[in-house]
Image 1 (cartoon, rainbow, N blue to C red):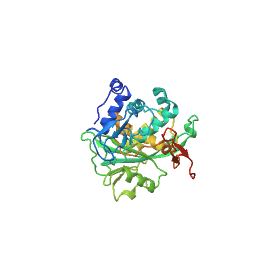
Image 2 (cartoon, one colour):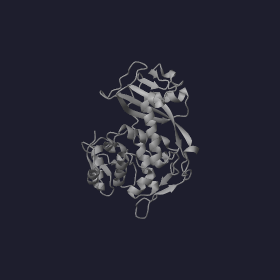
Image 3 (spheres, one colour):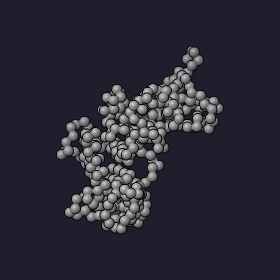
Image 4 (cartoon, rainbow, N blue to C red):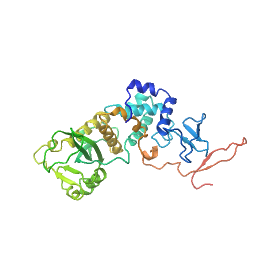
Length: 345
């Protein structure tokens, strides 16, 4: 596990571009430079183009930020490092407005930073939940645009949640007989996702995507769960007149914290990009006991997924994608790059 850094240690360790670049190099190539194209171990840093290393065997140029959340970014490394540190260590997270003030950047830049960092919080190869898992659904309010949030007139987003129930003594989820109370337990890992409705199709898809087959599912006895009994051990707890947080304490605590966080940090979530905000909450919840060691994951150094571009985030086609480029030669012999629209030439 990575070493935790205090604020003063972080300021000293990553005080300039050179220190940040050296840290990235060590994370990417612990044993020294290795060309991703030919596997050769001989490379040289390009003085004219920071962050780039050229292989002396095949000539391939590789950036130390390639494949991370900083892929093709023009921002200084120090800005990325500070943004990741603030979002990883702050107990309630950082909104784009707060990051704008902390980093002295424009709101658009701060927004893009937060969106990219949130997408690096989820490892696509993460292990599913297992053992004993509480599963439940809840509605959280959302607001539209930049209008003042009014809970009475807010819309609702349907969220499904699954949280591991772990014995405090062993830190393992130990199934008990059906209907038995789970005393002396705590919550383990968490998963959240937006679902379209409360139908069996939506709930089963969420459970199968996040919970390991053979695990014990504790639910509120909703009619959508019996279809999972073939692959899971279902232990329904019908709420009835009893308060829901008594029957399903950990899932209800998670939903309560989620609603409080959404209102306190973002003054109400918006429907757009809501999945990325849920990913941030899950990331922070699962690392609530060791937030200060989440820095490398925030930068995309500990995950294995393609970095997202601005056009990926806003779900639009890049208007410059597919354009042809001609290289007429100047009088000096150096190429002149010219972009042409599609269908020309």
